[in-house]
Image (cartoon, rainbow over all chains, first blue to last red; front, side, top):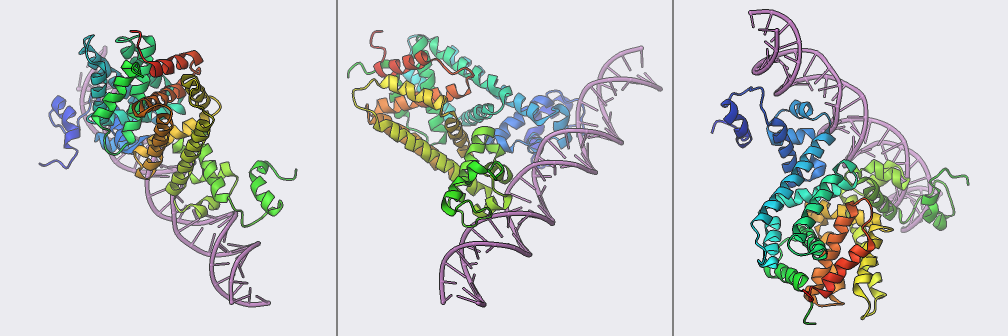
Length: 203
Length: 203
DNA sequence: CAAGTATGTGTACATCTGTACACAAAAACT
DNA sequence: AGTTTTTGTGTACAGATGTACACATACTTG
């Protein structure tokens, strides 16, 4: 290894221009910077998103971030909007692999556990986006669109009211789970979804 | 009125020491500063909580905040913990006025609408606390305690699983509602709770 | 090839921030 | 009374931050 440790961050550029040190014209640099911002949000929180921190995470000099994004708010807005879009895209993809007539509670449980486990970073970013939007009108649309996508997804497999209800349960479980230290038990979550879907008929 | 406009902020001290201008020994100053911090969080977001902003909001000089709180994290921690406690206290109080056999969905709807309307500030602070806790272990207990209180409240009126499920619905509706521009419709929320409580028996 | 433009980079600077600290004044104590 | 301790305040300072901008290099167009 001759490179220091920014190796992993150089790959995209290398592959396009052949590890040429001072390469110009790096397409996708904007997006790479935005993604670096996302990872800073995920790992250190939204308040740590500074030009310098993002530049370091992206492996680019400070001037590069200020060149591609006039203001820090622009950078944040693009990063969070992109995060929300990725999130929704993944949700839709998940939904496609779903037949009608499947065990909905079990699938929802899988989804929750995935968002709390392997995809935890994504979840954290989504939640940071949510509260950031509370005081930044520019980000509000990204948040509400995520909610809408969630509702549409669930209403497609049940009905209007049940879909909204399941979306709320899903959202609530995510929120409660993301701060809990040991991941919640699988059975616990599944039981909750089952109760939400089947109801209290036996009472 | 001889005082400028810090009048409302002086009341506590006045009542104890008789409107003595340069009064020392102002008990409750610590708490007042913490509450000022809460209001800064509610109105401008957690990232705007600085010694200077809090001092201005509390009507005290800069040195006062650094005197009462060694570090900014201490101030934030106390403020948010207090906010969470207030929140839980209000929840319990609400629960006491509840008979068994009441219309649970209607009451839950009232609660959601109250948190989204008159008590919106409180809700915003609670949510900022939640994400702040994601990257500050010191705050995590306050968040989880809020969740626990919520669950206990709901399980007391139903059963274990249904309580958890309702807590999740409640939490999810709050999250989705706090970013939505026009407040959600009362009927919509009530319908959701009704479906959650009664289930889909007729399907 | 020459000129012009888009892209990239290093540095500088005004501003804001946390915090330390010297001082002042009241209260508690002897 | 005097002394010590607690409480309060103004100021100073080092560091971080957003952003501007002069310069450098590559690409594009003629």
